[in-house]
Each structure stands twice: as structure tokens, then as C-alpha cells.
Image (cartoon, one colour):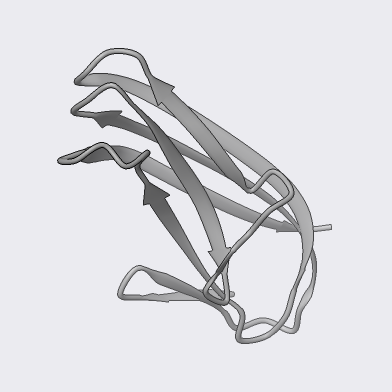
Length: 104
């Protein structure tokens, strides 16, 4: 029971404990370390929901995934954010992004 608006997922269900699985397939135009994080209610999550993908060559495609179990409440919002390592002009291209929430 999610809705999406402007790249933000909002949970509209009754709440509960959920297993999260996420994956991303993307490339980077430079040699760089890219952090990918799931943000919950505007705060970057921890506990395995933030990963660093190192690109050792420019313009190469790579992937990353993460998972975790946590409580979701009605109205909680979710976003995926990326951050470079401070290298100027870093650009990423996302080919696929998958987010799965399964109530446990």
C-alpha cells in the first residue's frame, strides 16, 4: 500500500514489520566511490541500508544491493539518495532501481 509522488514513496497501510530488499544497477562517469542510501522520513537509514559502490574505471556499469527488517508506520516516506565522494563533476546514470517491501 504505497503511493509515489515526485520520487517519494509514502506508505498508506496500517503499519507493521517489513523486510526491505533493494537493488540498483548504475554507472558512473569517473573513478569514484558512490554511496547509495534509503532515506526514511528524510533521514538516511543505517543498519545495512546504506552501501558504498566503488567504481575503479570510468563509464563502467555496476550494481549494489541491500536489505533489512524494520518497522513501517502509516505515512512513513522513503527515498533513495546517492552521494559521490567529493570528486567534482561526478555523474551517475541509473539503469534499474528495485525496492521491495514484504510484511513479515
